[in-house]
Image (cartoon, rainbow, N blue to C red):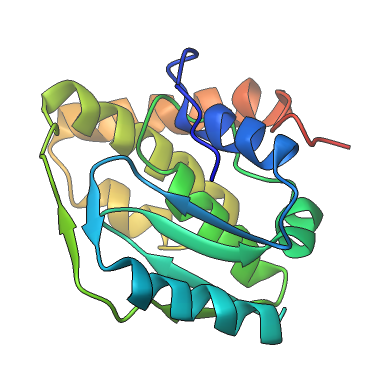
Length: 176
């Protein structure tokens, strides 16, 4: 088990650094505010040893179980996203676009705390907008046109920021 303290205010970077020093053949990334039955989770970790074309996923709290080979091939978590939000959705969509099969974790999970506030919601919406643009996860025009005019302008600015600046930044410490 490797625990990385997030000194960069970037969960993606902390996860990538943990993966860089890990020696196992399967990685299991778990949010620090997750409560679960370890034996149930361990069964999924053993299953992922048998099938490298599958990754296991839970949204909230975020849990990802993936083989180390697949993780490094995908390039790790995208560090361009702010401190929390869409980095988890982004890696899920990237793994799916590379042809790996998504399977949801079917274990009892609980979030221990809810630290979501307006500042984090805005940051997450910005990151999700970037993910939508990159992976066409949802048609962006549907997302943009349903909002209040101020929200519409904000999302267009985020899209412009992504196209002009962010997508050209280094994606992760594993960037080739």
